[in-house]
Amino acid sequence: MAVAASGVLRVVNPATLEVVGSVPVAEPAHVQELVAEAGYVQERWGETTPVERADVLRRLGEVVLDRADEIADTVVAETAKPRAEAYTSELFPAVDAATWLVGSAPRLLASERLRFGKLHLRHKRAWLEYEPVGVVGVIAPWNFPFAIPFTQAAFAVAAGNAVVLKPSELTPLTGALVGELFEAAGAPAGLVRVAQGDGAVGEALVKAHGLGKLLFTGSGETGRRVAAEAGARLVPVTLELGGKDPMLVLDDADLDRAVAGALWASFTNCGQVCSGVERILVERTLYEPFVEELVRRLPTVEVGPLISEEQRARVGDLVVDAVSRGARVLAGGEAPDRAGWFYEPTILAAVPADARIAREETFGPVVEVAAVAGEAEAVRRANAGPLALGASVWTSDAARAERVARRLRAGTVWHNDHAYSYGAAQASWGGVGESGFGRTHSKHGLYDLTTPKYVDRDSGRVPVPWWFPYDEGSADAFRAALEVLYRDGLRPRAAAAWRERRALLKLARRYRP
Ligand code: NAD
Image (cartoon, rainbow, N blue to C red; front, side, top):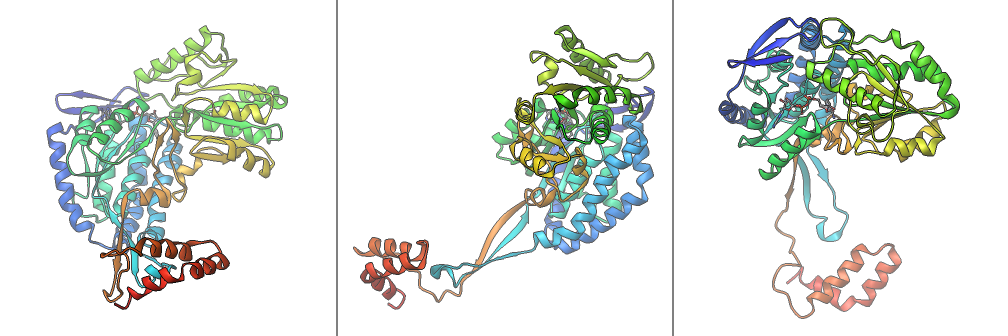
């Protein structure tokens, strides 16, 4: 946690409430300068080849590995998440992204030759060039303060862009490290700039002139504001917003694995995961043993604190509201009596539809379990609500998993696992509905950070039949050509050619005036 005081962010460890560092805050007016400077650096960087950029990314991966402990220390100091999670959820995705980009970005970003089959275009030599968008603004949350901004910046840089990163004001030390690592890897000075501060600095970044793209990861409320502002400036934006992921446990699921998966996916990072499981929908025949085992094994869960007093109060309020409307607390449900912003891992049952927690993202260590009559009800309930980031299906029948996956409304569907694919760079990441739009990671995330430019070569010797002047037969001739070129099948094409032979002959003569 960090507190703004006289131009600095003081960072507080949410478990011990000790101050662990501070960073100077950027003046909102200074943000425009950072964007302009990043723009200068990008001009040169954008001229490098994807292969040259891959060299920097290769070193970046090495630098992250060399400094893995320092990164983990910083993340743990700012968030107090279990140290194991600093490696699994922060470092693994980061190194995987750098490594995947080294191997894949040069191929994906290489000029792509297009070939035209149709006669009137066959002489063209054409390509798609994937050009950088320029300066990418990255506005990041605190829950994965390293993995999210690092992977987004790495993708942007691989595509030839510069980055101005606005880390969360709650995790600025990790944000500062992201910028440092790019420089340590030999990226040009200033290619990845960091603007520290709260929402006002984020707003200044959104309003800065010269942005080619914005990647926003955070709450739906802020995301809407950012999208409106970016829209007014016609700056394209990718929104990675909240989720309320369902986990569908079907009657043929491996109970042991499903319970273990549910505990991890609901409580890792203290539930502060956009694609954390918040709703477990269990087929009725498995419900009793599943819940019994879930509660029995709850003590194996290891959670840190929530990020702030405010977050803990919000989670507590959601639980109180649910209970006041009839929900049952099967375990947890209290803030323990100790220093820090801790809240007990909590399991709720019988959550009524009118409870706030049934609709709002909890973003804390609370999960709801509910029995469903069968697959159809599981899918219906999973798809209810506006948030649709991830979902998982737990069954030992792969065909069943595929069938259910097709019917689930979500950006990602996992089978017998949950959320892991943030750490697999070739997997697309992003939501549908109010969970956002656009994609990060994967070839789509990379292409989203480029502007495809169509470029061609023409010898200038082939006459162009559709240029001026038109005459009274032109329309008939083009209509005939349309049929001959595009009718499905040789027979109808040949018939069209014969039927319209006069118009076509006339058109052909335009090639030899
Ligand atoms: P938040 O919306 O409060 O803040 C996100 C970032 O936006 C911060 O850096 C903040 O300073 C900045 N900001 C605040 N006001 C701004 C403004 N007016 N203009 C520009 N920037 C502004 O979110 P948070 O609390 O940091 O993060 C938690 C949320 O993020 C949760 O809803 C979670 O689901 C979501 N999230 C989504 C993903 C995903 O991949 N879809 C990943 C992680 C977190």
